Amino acid sequence: MTRLATFSIVLLSWAAIYLPALGSLEIKGEEGRRILPAITMLETGDFLIPHVGSEPYFRKPPLVNWLVAASFKLTGQRNEWTARLPSALCVLAVALAFITVARASLGAKGSLIAALIWMVNFGMIEKGRLIEIEALYVSLLGLAMICWLSWWEQRRSPWLTWIVPSVFLGLGVLTKGPVHLLFFYSVVVAVLYRAGEIRNLWHPAHLAGIAVVIGVFAAWAVPYWQAMRGANLAQTWSGEFTGRLGGDDFKLTHWLMNLPRGLAYFLPWTLLLPLVPGARFPTPRETNLARALIWGCAVPFVVVNLLPGALPRYSMPALVGASWLMAMTLSANEIRAPGWWPARKILPRERRLRFVIGTAIAAGIALCLYAVAVVPALQGRAKVRPIAAQIDALVPKSEPLYAVDPDYQPFLFYLRSRLIYVSRVDDLPLSARYVLIQPEKEREILETERWAPLRAQPILTVTDYRKHTVILLKVSDRSP
Image (cartoon, rainbow, N blue to C red; front, side, top):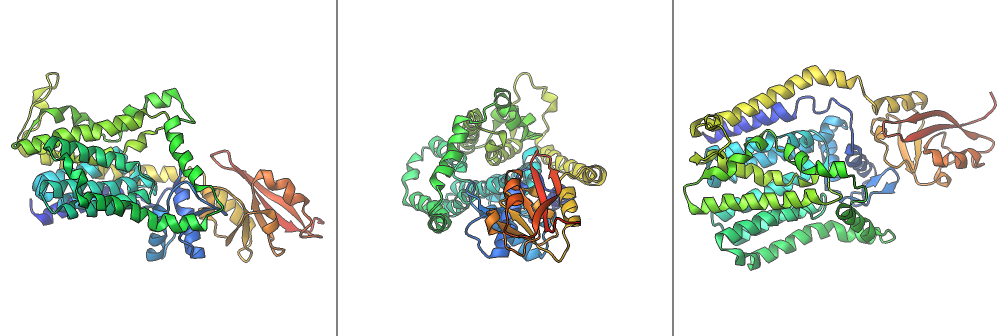
């Protein structure tokens, strides 16, 4: 397997799986929280403080917003495709790291298997085709873990082994917070313990790496904290964390499904997990590494999914170690299946790579068929774009549209009208003629005399799929 062939297989597989119809469906879920702050950053030039609507967004750091803004700026286009492209590119970056950085450790075939397993699983296909935090967050952990495992196995300089992964870990904190460190250090501690090298945790290079993680986050957090001095950021961030531990919205049925749904993210490879303990490796070091990966992936996966406030996607960082472990298993000289497993279903070693490539081809074909046969039908069921179209039909192109503390409204992404955010009704200028409000502010704006003798009058009320209602008002003379 030449390097050119390996690169070609990875790039073609990635393009076939992650690019078809990438921008054909309207934004959904939390995508708007990643896109709208990016648009505001480009329009205001303030890249320090993310905003959703007129208010600062405290709940997540801004790296994903920066990437979306960069994609819009570099491509010159603001649409679903350019918004989601950073997620797909992050998945590709990890796959390329597997076939380059990890090639010396996993071998030519093993590294290709790992890259394809990484790209071809339900979790990454779902998140890598959306502009959600998980694709970026898990990919940054993936780059850190690939670098650390590869260079540890190759006995490279401790400074290289610790510092470079720490940069990616710091960027991960700047994406979602520090939870990914649990998955990283579970693998690191297990690997070092099995190798009898646990003392390496006290090496100056590792301590410097911890400083790098803190420094990367602090480079944004310190000026952000100073700029937002009036806001209770500590309470917001601690509330995010304690909410996951305490389970503010705990539902027993959902909690019981966390582990099964977490395992489903690794499909179709979840079906091969029973073969992992039976893999036989040529050296004790490889055997110890495989056993360490089993514990290093399983422990945080179970712990996170058992938290009362957890969702299955919180355990997605385990996909990185699982991809490496499955690649080692499928590259092993021998696999001894459990007693209940039909021996005839274990592929010979020389056919395992073809099996993985075939799975990637099947996934690519399935996504292409999905783009051709299913996406057009889904486009006809749009729920967000029609709201923006109704509003645009009533607002003249020459008039700006003012949104009063709109909170998170996904349809704002699709408005063609020039949108201006304000925090209060009193902040509206006398020249405002079209205003978007939430129902709780309707009485206030209807009773205000700031435009006298003109008055604000509702001309459209719409409710979206989340049961959130917005009202469009026109400032005009009440007389016919």
